[in-house]
Length: 184
Image (cartoon, rainbow, N blue to C red; front, side, top):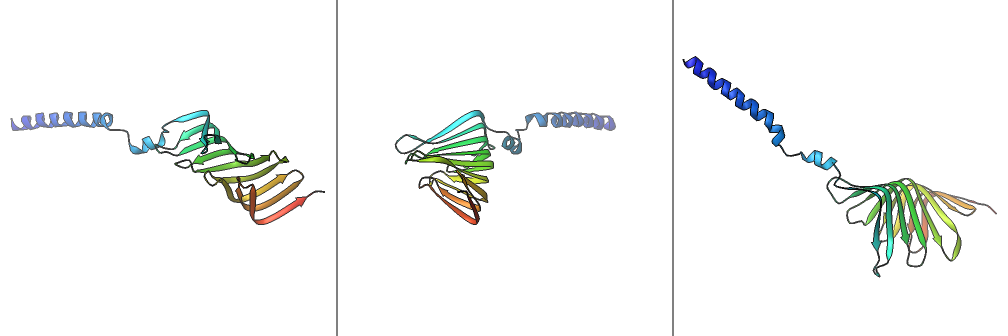
């Protein structure tokens, strides 16, 4: 009789544990890792606009696709175009394959086939700067890179390693290994 009672309790214990194990996966909340992999939002063919103190658009960041990184405030952009209108009337446009905007929107890192070109209504021609990576500091209006750089302006071209460009002041400082080619 004792053996039968023990067998009944063992069968009940086995049934309860099997039920608990089979339902525990359904009751568990999604793991943090799975939530971090899933973007909170994404946008297609979107434009983000920043305004200056006067309320005028000063910076527009457009992308084929914009993804929120994890569940944070960072965003990643694919096929990027950044338009900057300087207060002095000069316009700068930056293009790249991908970009990353840090929280607060103060820094934009652009990578892959980066092209920075500026136009000035007072001077004919377009200056084009090509590189593989570019960091743009929005508040300081500074574009910089440590990568190889090629600057084309009309019939002139320069190559260098590293650059700092102040877009508002219209100055470009080439860092090292500067080499120029000037046609008459």
